Length: 114
Length: 117
Image 1: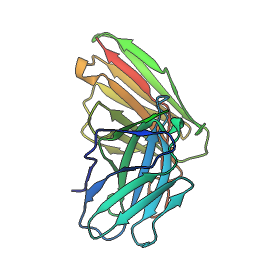
Image 2 (image 1 turned 60 degrees about the vertical axis):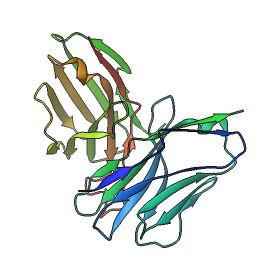
Image 3 (image 1 turned 90 degrees about the vertical axis):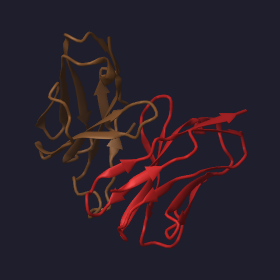
Image 4 (image 1 turned 180 degrees about the horizontal axis):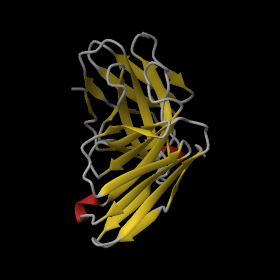
């Protein structure tokens, strides 16, 4: 069974600095997707970034980028130039081609300080 | 605004009450989902509907009863709940239920914070 682990329950960063959130997963599959979702205090879960496992190039969306290490089964999220609006819970998720289910981690609460 | 709305946003109910959660998606999607989000636990998938038919039920207790009258609306009927059912209940939708093969993703609503006394 697939599992997703986020080992950092809470993190904090100062505005304009860079922070990296870690995520590891366990799977025997070769084809899958990985996601980072953001859940701000308003609770609306928003897709931040997506990575296809068959792509070696790391996905990037403006200030958000990932470091995808397939062999190590690691999928970290880097937030550059952190902004106060980045304060939220961040969930890493895995999508299996076989089961077609989204498997979520337990989340990392990120606090951005002025 | 992701096009998925949920009402009510907050709900407090006693263990003998009957209530319903409502989800509506305005995205023209064909699949809808109920998730339970408890503190310090991964999101738990409860139910999946595709074209108004239930395609997944992850061993959810019968005190939770879903209803999908059409592809835009999804309900979760609640009765005789337990205090451990207190959680955030998230609704999501996607274009199709086969996410991986279609490179699709899910769009979430804001959730209903449920407290069972």
